[in-house]
Image (cartoon, rainbow, N blue to C red):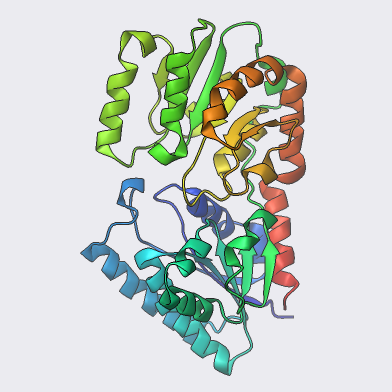
Length: 367
């Protein structure tokens, strides 16, 4: 029996962000390729985090190239299902809108299930800004299946009712933690506090830096890791951590990966992520922290309250509460029992194996 044909049009690294990491995994999923006859097309746009949102000739070329790759695949591959990682606004939305005319035309002549996977949020803001945006988004989403990261994000689409159905697919991350990490972690020495994400101001790194300034305890050390989007922000940050009050209590590691990243997670005791990033939906860094048994101090942005429960961390509703919540976290969350609970929460909900199983269910149940 022939396998159903699946065309995946998706983001992949570089640059390294949430949607790209998920796309990397999907493209390498052996189980997916055993279930479907797969073809993958990479959405190429930005080479670095700092390049996201900028328009240049190179990106225009990528759009033209992508258009013809999709057109050729529809004509020659003739998929039964199409999986697409969608964008919500700006130039990327109009690129996606242009591409959608290809599979909408294809769908007029062929039976095909189309899935749009959203890794971010902000649709409601976009469609509320003008009637044109609302009309175009309704056209874009007409007669497709929405894949969202959690039920907390469904209200983002409340004004757009042209899609078939909403399906939920929580993110997962690779398990890189040592099996003995919980036993190895030392809770008696210096407490290591970790911020690991892109160094974008709205993601909260500056709030963590203010915590470091206002923390007088000598047994606490703050670690920052991630790539910069703004040279001005980088200079301001680096100048601040060289000041006498921060020099001995803050370490900036830059963009890290592999064994260096693993070692930093293993050394840490608390993961802090006070994000107010407008498009924050389901941060993979929080899942990575869970995989290493780290409790979380974060905000109620996007799906974070879905990921973090009362036993695995603290979710603040206002960043003005951060210092008080940080003190509570130091007192109540940094211990072996909480670490074990966080690790188990990851194992039960946010592994790549669980993500893969859920994805196959979504793609298979709508045939």
